[in-house]
Length: 311
Image (cartoon, rainbow, N blue to C red; front, side):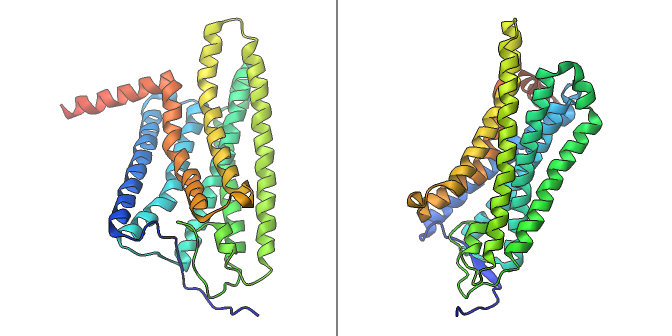
């Protein structure tokens, strides 16, 4: 019979043993975090300040930037604080809050990416009905549904995970509180219930993925039928960034959770988790700003306004 005890805190994985390497990791995390804050902050400012970007596509992009800021702010600041203060501890309540927020932001972001695929499908394949199908009220409802799905999924997984009894061991082999790592500490077979919920969530996620793929098959078929090369180029410039973001998001998470056990090792697990938790918030603003001329113009005007105001 395993020895069951109440756990008051958890110990996260240490990145390095020497102080020099710890400070190097802190500087790296700080640079990544500031880059994510800057990139997503510029997206938010540009969309909010330019009335030409007050359209459904940019409304969803604004929500995506908010979710990216939330997801990276859930994991990196605590990791930086632990490195700076040379500690590994996170409280039981802090770990539960981190699990809740991370699942909330990740689920809501994936739901929002599905909504954005629907927005592009209607805009390209049903342009005459775009105003009625994706009006301001419909946009608000779809964005609220994405955020709401994240909240419900987070409540489900957090309550199920932290209702489990834990053994004396409280060491997590991860730099943040991740559900699979927490389940390894459970002393009860009740953890299988959470595994079932995770499998159910993956099934729903796979359904969203199929919806996105089918939407883009229809979009590409419609684009290739366009007679104008300029029209095709403009349409691709609005679709390819979203497709790249979806591919990055899905591929990193799938590799993190669906890789074969033979590929698993502590160093690989932490590297993959670091990628899927930090890479999308950093890269998403770059992907959207590189090929989107409207967003480039809005950012240029924003910089001009800031510099002129300083003078």
